[in-house]
Structure formats: C-alpha cells, structure tokens
Image (cartoon, rainbow, N blue to C red):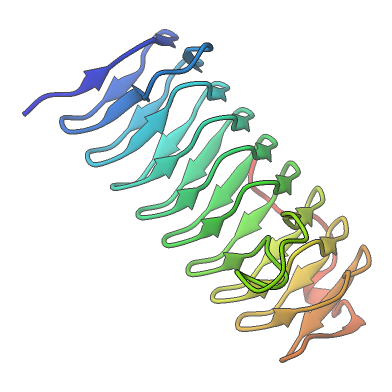
Length: 196
C-alpha cells in the first residue's frame, strides 16, 4: 500500500501517509498544497483544491474539488468537505464534521465534533438551488450543532452544542437550543478563539 499523488503540487516538508490520495480525479487545475502539510491514511484530496501552509488531516478525510483552504487548518478524522467551499486560516474542524458545497468559513473558526452544516432547504422536494452557511471570523460551533442552509454565524459568535440554527446569529452572541435562540454572550465566552 502506498500513497497516490496525481496532478498535485506540494510544498516543502509535506507528509502524505500510505493510502492517502492527493489530486484525485481529472480536473483542469491541479491540487496545490503549501509547506508542512500532513495528510493521514485514508484521506482523499481531489484535484482543483488549493491549500495553504500547515494543513493537517486526521484519518479518512475527504476534500472535494473547488475548495480553497488557508494556512494552519486542521481537518479532523472522517470530516467531509464537499467542495466549492472557502475556508480561511487558523481553522479547526473536528472529527465527523460535514461541510457541504457553497459554504464559507472565515478565519480563526472552531467547529466541534459531529457538527453538520447544510445547504439544501427542501432536499429532493423543491429545487431552489444550494446555499451553504457562512461562518464569520472568530466564531465557534459546538459539538453536534446543525446549521441550516443560508444562515450566517457572525464574528466571534458562539453556537452551543446540539443547537439547531435556523436564523442568522449576530456577532458576539450565543445561540442555544432547538430551534436556537440568541442570547448575550456570557463573559467567559467573550473574546476571540485562540487557534493561532
């Protein structure tokens, strides 16, 4: 068993484990990965993906085509980024996160284990197009939270574990419950994430 690298340009000091695939599929643009990446076994990074320096995956990660990722981004085990997605720098996507197409994630963002972002308001029943969530800089999303299509999580906002977010969450607030309601951000949660 060995790594597979097709149509990929990697920077200095990259480690690609056995059974990882970089540059999967046939696309006009190659995969581009910056310096110091670690891509663990079972992970697949499609072609037409651009990733900055310091990228790291857990095992069995999927990154689909048309994705742009900044510097110092961690993508946890069994996380899926379904392509046509923009992710900033200093981002931590924990284990089993689902990021659908048409999603935008800013910089210095934390997304907890099992969080699900969605992009289809009426799956299969109505074809209204796809619109992913937007997570602005400094926001935190708790474990097993669900973000419905088109919602915006404002800068430095905090979404509690298990919350189901159906409407936008303003900057510097807390969203909690099902469906989520917005509250003032408690003092211990005030400020920015420490992901740098």
